[in-house]
Image (cartoon, rainbow, N blue to C red; front, top):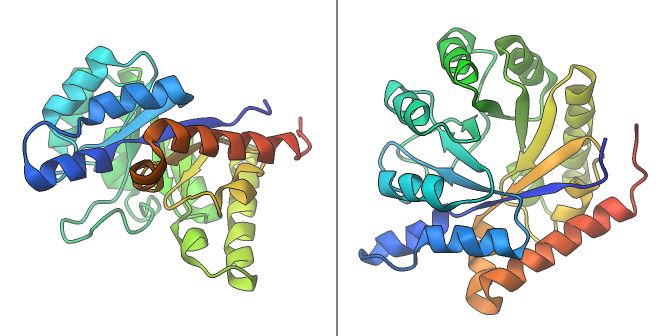
Length: 250
């Protein structure tokens, strides 16, 4: 595997700030272009059923203006499938979605939802879109994702990030390490994300079989204090440092 770890920057919460007041500012597409210039390898945007942050017009503009890959996060619904097939982003990440949640609260239960998810994965893959499943770090969910034909999984890092430093956080980190190793064994590309910040990113970035991290809310929050460019460059440096001190496994 390559020592390089990709960084995907999620711009959803730039749109959240815009929508809190209405109007055009701040512009998530401008943020996406800034993120790419600062070292992001791709942009993630979640088009939710209720359009609480990213809008359909944002997706149109991101597809037209980005020079780096767009990862469209979406629920497995007919509406979202039609949008993805129309725009054909580089990647689609299937996520669970509940209208009452503030943000995505956990991983998709791929094992239980196999029959529902199968046609979505089949159509997306058939259209040449790279499909990932946002899941908990559990072998059962990894195996189910593989059986669906999805080439990528993204491990939910929320429990790890929310755990207090010490034994509890270490247990969650070990689950991520075990899951990432299992993904590699069964031929899945492994990504990770949700809640990562400067104080939590390096142990996850050091997992050698993880190829990409997706980070958004923390970077948007830090941008208030340091600017978006500086926040992304600092995160990129932390990820690079973690990979530089970790032996690369073939």
